[in-house]
Structures are given as structure tokens and as C-alpha cells.
Length: 305
Length: 265
Image (cartoon, rainbow over all chains, first blue to last red; front, side):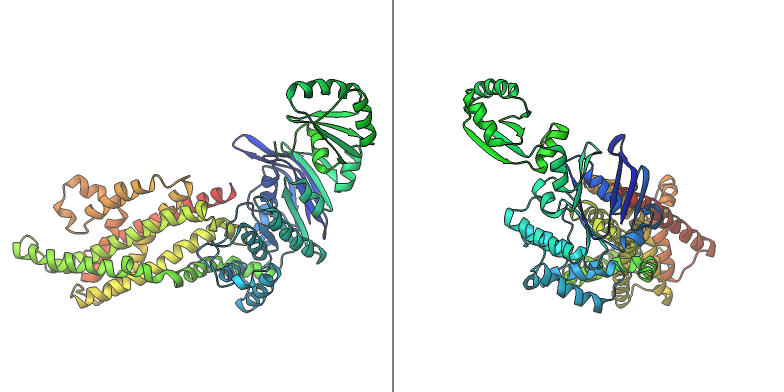
């Protein structure tokens, strides 16, 4: 569906995307995971054929965005990061008019709009205005709008940023359903739980480059030990003292602003050994390694940095 | 799917017009005064009130009445003002505030089609308001010739000569801080000095020369030729059309580039 080789984007002398290679297969849900400014949105805008690439080769749906932009866009569904619903139109007209941009006949669009409003649970808001909708509803409406042309490829840029947990889960549920219907989905996110929930395969992006690629499971297995011990200390002095001991005990250690993370295959045993050596944190949490940890290990930074 | 793409390629600008018309269906009542009643009142006050005074004074020597002289001027000036306003804030809205142009740009529509659609919609409204203006003018006795119907295309051409380059300008702006300056230092002086309310020959020679660059003056002359039926020379008419068309074409080219750059950023 998408094939990028050494894809590059330069803005005003700043390299936003620095020669990335990406392949997306039909039917999969593919993610770009990374912090803000990693180049995810720039990549998405090139794939969406609204922003030309500065270098490298890009094919979307087997076509060249530089030559066939309109033809490719006719087969894409796009959910942008910033809501751009038409505030001057009703919920219903937002769907119909958007469908008209694709040149589809009104009769066909009416049927589709009815089904899609049902799908995103906004049927009762059809005649209402867009502005009073909550953030989650607006996002769902934007997803419905992106599906009006029955796209072969759905692109979502930070689909749940700014939504409360309940609204996020509703969006995820809808995306899951689409995925099960065989829609190819590409999304960007800086939430590791979103990437773990939705993506079959993802790339971790940092500073315009790809740091790692694989399924969420394989990325964790490949780059992070099985478990993580998170320790918090009452004050800085104790934290630094403990850090000394912790480092001597070996394993991979990440010292963050308020926490010390220790990557190990057996968290509880590690905690016991440290306790015997006098390390007494305020709070200890032993958990499974996540994509967040993979990112930290690969880049030395957290995703919200 | 290929069929859909080619349909959109041909008629993309109509899709944009369709959106604007859909919005207008809900909003037209609020624009009635600005576009239709306001200009008609203006015409009555200027033409009948002021005209009476000027003619009594004997300072307006012409074979048309002052009302007949000022009506085409007002028509051209009014469509200029609404074309300018239509291509400043609404363009910023589409690019930045509501980002509706960005949602269009994600579909098969191209930036040039989005611009063309907006200009086309603006022209439809200009044609409508020019028609109503002329009907009122006719009732008031401000039209001296049946050729006055040609004032509608002349008004549309005049409006486009402003909306095309001003839309381009708006697309290059990051905020609307300069917009009032455009209205105050470009539109208002043109409004006053382009032969709208008094003949250009009453002005100093250097202003007369400068007004050759004013699309409004060319628009006023065309509208006036139509509504009075007085054509000074065919060359002059062709000249006015060519200058206005140059503003439209130049403005559209600049605008298509500005829209493409802005929507890709």
C-alpha cells in the first residue's frame, strides 16, 4: 500500500524526516510511534499527498504522489491531527459535502452517511451543529468523514490526542472494527498504549529517523528485558545514593527525573537483592516492559519529552 | 475509481461552490442587507439626494443625470468592496482559523481548484447582487440604456480583478493584522478616486495617470459604458477588459501558487 525509500522532508533548512524506509502491507494496522517533533506528521502529510517530499522515493497505492496526487487522494481517508470539521455546516452536511469533494453522487452519499453516523454513534446529532460536540464526538465524526469515500487506506494523525480515557477507548473500538473489516490503517501516536493496542507493526521514530521496526511484541522482546523495576525515592539525596548501589548491581539502569528504572528478567528477585543492600525506595513497582521502555532504551528519552 | 477522479478533475471547483452554496442556504438572510439593501439605499441617497443638490448647483454638466452617472460607479465600487472583504477574512478562515481548505486539500481537489471554486462562488454572489442593484437602479431611473445588462458581467470582472490577487495575498499572511490596512489604504482610496462619484477629469493629472493602475477605474468605466450606453471608443472598452483580465489572470496564478504552498506547509 505504501512504499518509502530514503524518504526525506526538509522545511526551511530543518530536516524533519531524514531518509526513512517504510513498507505497509494491505490489511495491516501500521503505526509511527515517537515523541512530538519526531517527524511523524511530516511523514503522514507526504503519504497523504498534500505535502511534497524533499527526497527519496515514495509510492502510495502503487502510484507516485508527485504525479498522481488527486488520484491517490481519491482512495485515501484522512483524519488530521487538528480537527478541521466544517463549523459552518451541520453534522450531516459535513459528511455529504465532504463526500461531494470526491465527486460521489448524493444518493450514494446519503446511504453512506446514515451508516457511518450509526457506526460512530452520532445518529442523534445528525442535524445538530458541529461546535457543541465534545472532543471525542468531533474525532469520531472526523473518522466517519474520512470513510465517506470508502477508502482503501485510512491515515490517522494522533487520533486520540487530547481525548479523555473513555473517549479514547470509543475511538479505539471503532478503529478495531475497521481493522477487522480489512481496512488498511496507518496512524501516528505518541501513546505507547495506543500503539500496543492497535498496531500490528510499527516503527519507532526519533529525530526524523527510524530507531526500530517490528510488531509491538517483537520490539519489546528484542530491545527490552522482560521486566522493569520502577523505584521512587523521598528526596534527591536518597535517590542519588540508591542510584550508586543500583548501578553496582548491574542490569540496564535508566535514571529519570523522579524515578530509577531497572531492566531485568526477574524484577522481584532484583528488588530483594537491592533491599538486602540497603536500597529502601518509597515506592516500588515491578511491571512488564512496554514500548515506552523500548523507546527509552533506544533513545535515552521518554515519549513525552 | 478512475472515473471518479476524472469527474473531480473536471468539476472540482463546482464542489467548492456547492459547499459555499450549502452554507449560504443557512446564512443568506444575514447578508441581505450588506449585499442588497445597503447598496440600494446608498444609491438612492447619493443619486437622488446629492444628485439633486449638484444638478441645482449647475456644476455637473453632462447629458446624463448625476444619478445615471453615479449608479455604475457605485455598482463597481460596491462589488469591489465585497470582493475584497470576501477574499481577506474568509481566506484566512479557510487556511488557518477553521482550516476548511485543508480538509478540501485532503480530497482529490487541488489547491488551484479550491481557489477557483472560492472565486467562482464570489462571482455568483456578485452577479446576483449586481442584478438586484440594477433592478433598483432601473426603478429609480438611473439606467439610460438597455445595454445596462452588460454591467453584470462588467461587475463580475471588476470583482474578480480584486478577489483573485487579494485571495493570493491573504494566503501568504500568517494573521489578519494587515487586512484592515488593505481596506483602509487600498480599497478606500480607490473607492473615492476611481471616477466613482465624480469624473476623473476633475482630478489633478497625476492622480488621473495613477488611476490607470486602478482596476476599479477600469471597472467603473465599463459599467458606466453599459448603463449609460455611451461608448467613448471601442479601443477603450477593449483596453478596460484587458487590464481587468490581466489582474484576474495574474492574481489567479499568484493565488494558485500561494494556496499550493500554504496547503502543503
